[in-house]
Image (cartoon, rainbow over all chains, first blue to last red; front, side, top):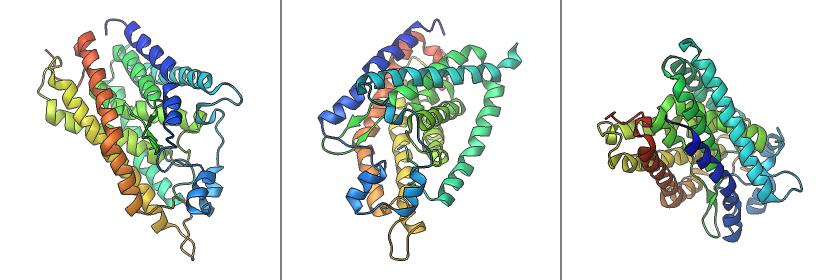
Length: 105
Length: 227
């Protein structure tokens, strides 16, 4: 690998473009992915909230649900979520990769 | 394809944790033996790419949304075990921080996206392009085809898991306890949208990325033959 700049640049450009991923679905009136409706939305479709689902669905509340952050502008929150996610996932794998390749040193 | 908490009953999600666990353990032990330290940055970028490409929701006008996964690309660049690790960690962060995919469903989501996609991509790409040189025009095309088929198989597995829930868990009156739609609904719904739309998104993303990486440094494509 010659240098990482093109890869870093590609990830940064993608991060800035991520709001397309919420803007287009809104514009074209597309909803959630199939089988990923919230219990409330699902009950509108089938007329009830399945009992087991009601209990399990509240098992855990994520701090930044659906890549949003409270009252922050959703597009800005989406970009910041993208950057946070890149740092967390890329960083974790980088550290894990360093541990896994320790034998080389 | 990110099953949320509440859609799978306890015996299903426990079995799926059991199905994914050996792949997590094996990916760590295999990578400990095979991963080169100079490849670690590429693995980190691949992981970040998987995270970010999944944020690009592609709409079907008036219908549902879906997105590429990116695990096929990482498989072709770094092998299936690296893709299993990268995709699993992305799914973990998505569930813990962004509520995208459930905690209870993490085993199932890892099995479909971090096991099925990498290993089918690996087998298909080896079959189609295992003898092609890394600079060959055929590499991105074979990558796209492998990605298309693998994503569809993962969608089919997800549809199967969701579709068996009303058979496994229901009240005496026949009301679903977890995911409510039967196989006769889930398979066509998820199958068609992936065959017609999202599979193509995955294919184009994978092929384009491989095309650019070939021009940058073709030696990064581990599954193709070295020049």
